[in-house]
Every structure is written in C-alpha cells, then in structure tokens.
Length: 182
Image (cartoon, rainbow, N blue to C red; front, side, top):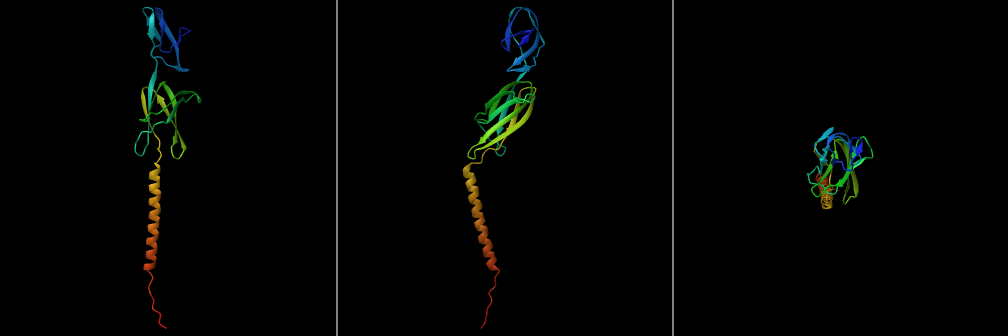
C-alpha cells in the first residue's frame, strides 16, 4: 500500500500518525486494487484498517447430466489484461466448490480436469467480471462409469444379434414351397 508516497508492509492495516492521509494505491498480490476511500483522517496515532475492493469468488463445478459435484478439478484465475498473471489457484473440494478472494476486475477462469478411467484431459475457460461477491457455476461432463459402458455395449451386441435372427426368420417366411412332379 502506498500512502503519501510511503510504502507500507501490509495491504490491510498499518500504523498511522495523526492527520489526513491520501491513499495513492493499494497493491494486493501484485495487483493494483481500488480502495473504498481516497483519504483517511486519523484523530490520534494508531493502527488503521484500510478497506479495499477484494471479493470472494465461489466456483461450483458440476456434471450437467445429473448435477453431481465434481471434486479435484484444478481451477486457476488469471487477469484478462495480463495473459500470464494468475492471481489464484486451487482445487475443488468434495462438494465441487473452490473459493478464492480476488480484487475487482475482469478474469479468465481456467478449469482443468483429467477424466478418470479414460485418462482424457478436459480443459474449459470462462470469463467473469468481479464487482461483488460472486458464485459461478461451471458445468463439465464427468466420466461415465466403466460398468455403465460395458452394460451399454453388451446390450447393443445382444440387440444386434436378436435383430439379425428376426430378419433371417422373416426372410424364410416368404419362401413358398413348390411341388415338382416327374
């Protein structure tokens, strides 16, 4: 935080002498964050908490087919105007939830998930503008369990075999017997 051209060690609070202080900027994790006040008046020396615009972003990852939560999804949040500036990173919990505190601004949310059994990486990106506490739902398909795939394939094979037998039976039903006399 920069106040009256002096850099303070904490972005949230610091020791202030009596007087009026002008807030010139707040840096949080390398990001310039708007303050809720441009000046602060101190009546007596002491610690003062400076409020700045940092909000909670709650990301909920679910499967769109059955709306079950998906855990262990890697989530990274990057500033849109700075391509490689990742401001937060984490994984979803067993409820498919990841919560991050980030400053006001425009961000890209990158989701990375490795589909188990199939070992196929799934990557999805979405953009969001943070102006207040937000909840963002992101839908990604979860893997189909292997037993369901096997049941589907075996049902398909049995169905094809039954259809072929029916077709052969119908083919022979249309034949007529002809008597040949010698």
